[in-house]
Every structure is written in structure tokens, then in C-alpha cells.
Image 1 (cartoon, rainbow, N blue to C red):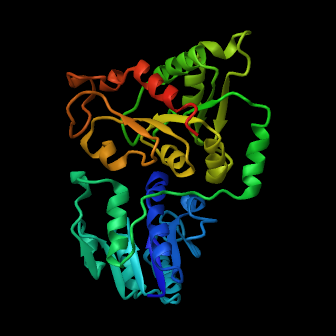
Image 2 (image 1 turned 90 degrees about the vertical axis):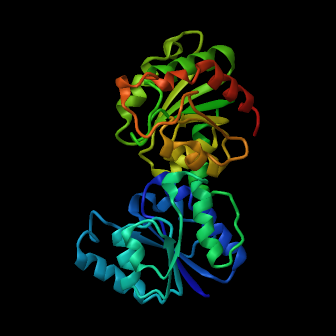
Image 3 (image 1 turned 135 degrees about the vertical axis):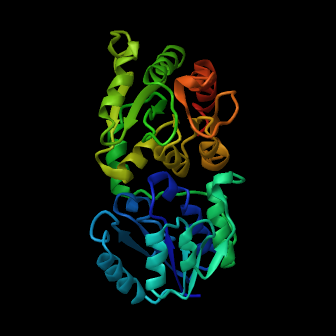
Length: 345
């Protein structure tokens, strides 16, 4: 097998958790040509990766929104003469695209109607959460004979690393990154609890705080910062910093790489932290399909904390006797886990 297309066209964290497939394939088959199909806003997760030979952009809300757009992309992919496709995220458009591209071997999960477009299906039922997302992905690579490597990676160009290092050049204290946003994909701590955690970190250690967010999360980041009493203390200047990721995923990854620890909910930047080697203390809700067994960080120094309540099908908010269950993740416990990791790297 000479050429393979790997598709992952959903969100940032999902693409990060698919990068172990790329490494597994390239390590097992060094001469294999590996192309990756991703959305435009996630492409920097896979660019500069030595295991990736080509990145193809899928724009389902743009130029590939219509059937004509799909047909044009299918013709482009067909011309590349792939031997196989691994459809790590399967929906109808991606299944149809792989079929129209006439890729001889099309491998994906047997969980949706779109499996009709596949030549080889795996009976994965991811909503049952019987393993991690990384392991579901690697199972597909094993169909091709790849030896699984359970390690996510993001590659950062030297010029981005240098630019970020210049920002941190005069900062000698350890850094704790706090990412309070989750893209509303899962339940989360309230902003003021992140602020309380920051206060305790500043009070009990010599660390500084970076509160991070993506475009659109400016208000949330400000809400957290405004709840940190130390931010205006004359005796503690320069203890709290704000970073909004306008510079893209590569810059965000380089910033996160400089953190000693990162704290946050189930969200893409947490998986970026694992990929660049920054220890993670993550906060997960008890909704069954959101649990860390499937979506937790995978770094060797990472930990995922959940409230001590039963798993539920979905959140019913104030109608639940455990509401707000996320408050049951104790600030002191999170602080202890952060403290353990401040000098790990």
C-alpha cells in the first residue's frame, strides 16, 4: 500500500486525538504517502508534522457545501489515486466523498447510515464509552497492519517558538495556564471557581497565571480575571496574564508548551497541552458520553477529575438533586494536583 487518506473533519480536540494514527502509520510504513483531510480551522494541528505528506482542506460550510462542491473535491481526490482511506470521523458527506473518490479500500466505524459507503467496517459503538477515542482511532490503523503508538503530537515551527519564547524571556516563575472555556461541549466549572483557584495558586506558590481563551471567549476570560483578587495587588505585580488565541493554533500550542501545568475542562486546548508535553489537570462532568474514559487527556502526567456523583444521560440542571455537581470538584483538590505538577517538567 503506497498512498492513504486519513480523514478527521470535526473539532480541534478530535483532530489532536487522531494524530497518534499518523505516527503509527508512518512508523510502521515509512515509505507510505499520508494525506490528511481536515477542516480549515484545524489544519495547523497536522501541518509541519513529519508523518504527514499532504493536507487537504474540507470546507462543508463553504466551497464544499453543495453536491457540486463535493463532486469537485472527489475529482481532486480521485486524481491522487489513494489505495485506502481511514475515515476516523464518519458522516454522510465524508462517506459519500470517499465513495465518489473511488478509493478502493474505505475503512470506518459501522455506526451510522454512512457506513454504506465503506468497504471495511469496524463495529465501534463510541457512545457506549468502552474505550478512549485514541484507541478507537488506532483500531482502524491496525486494520492496515500498523503498530499502534498512543501519543498525540503537534509540531511548532521554529519561528513561532522563538516569537513565543521572546514573550516569556523575562518571566522566571513557574506558569499555570487556566483555560476556562469549553466551547459549551460539556459541563464546566463556573468562572469564579477558576478565579478562586488562581487566587490560591498565587497565594500558596510563586507561580503566575495565564488565563487563555479562543476568539469569542474574551468575555469569559475577563470574567475569570476580574474574580482574581491578586490581579491588582501592589505586592504582586505581574501575577496574572491574559492570552486570546488570535495567532492561531501554532501560536497557542507554543504558548501552552511554556506552561508548567494547564487546568481546564474537556476542550481542545487541554488535548493540545498533552500533545506538547504540558501536564494537565482537567475537569470533566458526569454526563456519560463526556467522561474521561473516552475524552480524557492522555499524557503520562495528566489527570482528569470528575465530581463524585453517578453518571447521567444528560444534564437537567436545577431539576437534578446533584446540581451543581461541578462544584463538587473541590478547589483544594485541584490545587493539590496542580502543585504536584508545577516542577514535573
